Length: 276
Image (cartoon, rainbow, N blue to C red; front, side, top):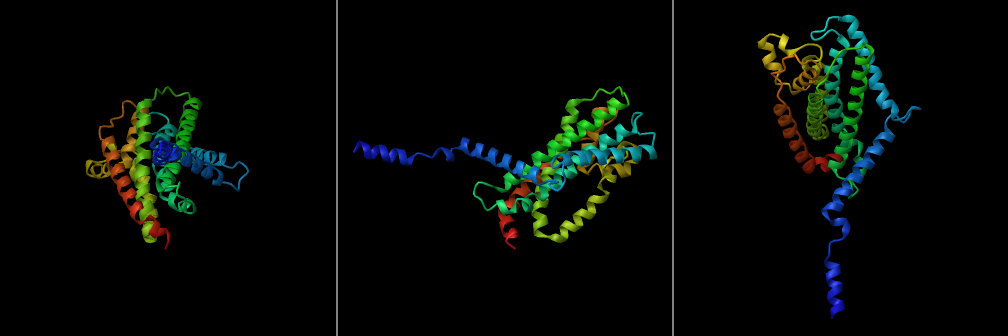
């Protein structure tokens, strides 16, 4: 009788893999595996492989910065146009790249979502973490290189830099998560979104300062959350820059709302959309 009771007690216990801690570790393993899959698939046709993923945006940024510095030698802030341009462009690219990669995460991992251990959130987190890492490294390399090459006397505010990166990354995660649903639901919306994204750099404060515009224009531009991301990054390198319009709470609010709406949509409609 005692043996039977012991067997029942043993069988009623939750297997180790079902404990909350085990599930968390399983999520970490799945996300890590998806990141490795992503790094292996990117630029696989080149001899440099994944390394080219980091070299290409840095090379493009250097080329674009050199072109714009020739066209405009007097930046609105400071004395070096390259540093002014990079502080706006890199923070802008943090948002656009994360948003685009997260929006395509479901399609990229479509074949894996049928496995019980792989969830939609795993696929999103893997792409999010990888792209935040890539663009943070890109930003650090470019800005450090400009400061070193031109011997600029700049004392960056690292807390403000991290806040700007967090704002751009979270906004990209939220909007990308929502777009992951909308892209699957409507190919027309995806085309319209790509058209709307083209002038976004112009109205996001990459080439100019919102403060220098007439109040009738700047009052509308501050509703663009990306303006707050670039404004915070500029404030990190130019302490005298008046960034009173920047509201991290507004950016995180937009990011949180879009992220929650995206998760709800993915939970309810993603598999129906993928089966079409």
